[in-house]
Length: 305
Image 1 (tube, rainbow, N blue to C red):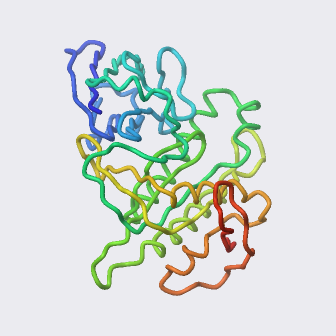
Image 2 (cartoon, rainbow, N blue to C red):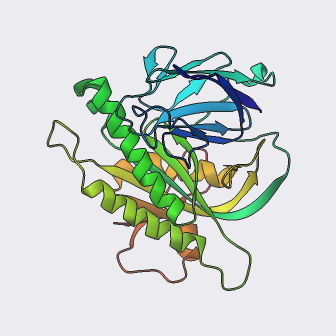
Image 3 (cartoon, rainbow, N blue to C red):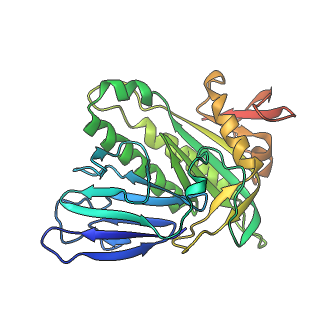
C-alpha cells in the first residue's frame, strides 16, 4: 500500500513525499525524510515501517524531544491510520494512505499467517526474535519520556547490529524485534544462521552493558532463533531491502520465545537452526523436546549464551 507524508515545517514551505516500506526521519542527511532545517530534531529521530502490505507503524528511535502521534508520545511502535498527525518538535506531518485497505484493519500484526503480496519468493532464512524482559514493570515505574527514550535507543542500537551483519529488521512488535537473514544460494556464501548467531551474541552483549535508567535493574533480553523456509515478498516501493517474511517458520520462532522463561538461557535455538550452522560452537546445551503451541510435533531446543 502506498502512503504519503505531508510535511508542514514551521517557517518553511510545506512539501509532500510518497513513502515505501521504510521511511527514516531525522536531521541526518541519510534519512529518507531529512529535517536538517530543525536543530531540535535528532539525527536518527523516528522510523516508519509498513508490515503485511498495508499496516504502517512509527517508532521513535530514542530521540531527545520525542515523537508524537495525534498528541500522544510514541513509546512502543504505534500504528498509523489515514489522517494521523505526527509531530516532531515544531514540524507537523500528516500521514495519508493512497489506497483503501480498510477491510484489513483487524489483521494481527504479531504473527503473520498469510498475505496477498505480489512478487513473493521462498527462501531459507535464519530468524531471530529478541524480546525485552521486564518492560511492563518498568512502564509502571519510569516517566513516559524516559521509557520512550530508553526503548527507542535500544531498538536503534540492536537494529544497527542486525543491519551491519547483513540482516533485515522485519518489524518492531511492542518491546520485541523480529529480524532475519536470507541464505544466499551461491556456493561458498556465508551461512545465514552463523551471521544470526553472531548478531544474537552481540545484541546480548549490548544489553549486558545496560541498566534501566533511575534504577539498578538489569536490562534483560531473551533471544529465540530458528531456521526454515519462509515466503518473502517485496511490498510497494522497495527501500533498503524491504521485505516482510511469513510462514510456519515465523510462527515457530515466536512460539520458541514464548516458552523461554522456563528454559533458563538467554538464547534458545531450534534443532533446525543448530543443524544449519557451519559448525556448532561450544556452549550449546540440549534442552530436550518441547511442545510448542500450534505445532503437532515437538521441537528440540538448545540453549546458549
